[in-house]
Length: 193
Image 1 (cartoon, rainbow, N blue to C red):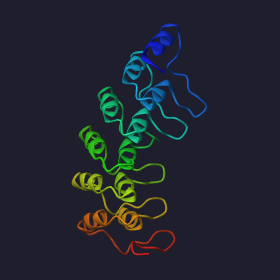
Image 2 (tube, rainbow, N blue to C red; image 1 turned 60 degrees about the vertical axis):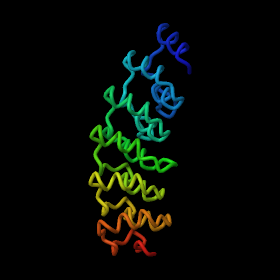
Image 3 (cartoon, one colour; image 1 turned 90 degrees about the vertical axis):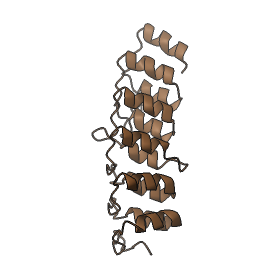
């Protein structure tokens, strides 16, 4: 919704705490619509900045998935946690976006996001970037100390993800860190198979 409508609704007693069937709050909605003015009004009305929907996604992670870096910055500056308890780390969301745009990852790292935080599937930001073939994002994460040997719930590592994606630049970048290339996932596959 628009700023004027949000202001009118809040002035007439609408609660910023109400959620939809998926557990999304009004702040999730404002973030999805890219409305920083509405987000600011909702925060002024005590909307929970770190609320998680039923999928464990916070408004900050929602903004990261949309690659809305100005809104990500706004939320971080207003107290959003990069990795809320039981929620998707915003860094994982920012690393797995459609484009190889490292701006969001840099912003989150500047605000002390844990570089090796993992989501519910135990996937790290480096694994998400590798799976998408994002060389620039992977480079920023490696420079921040991302662990190349972390494995997700299926035993896949960033090197395996990059190889499966055919991301030669990411494979080369990760190989420089000398990961365990013999590591096998739950299906017995390594980075070459």
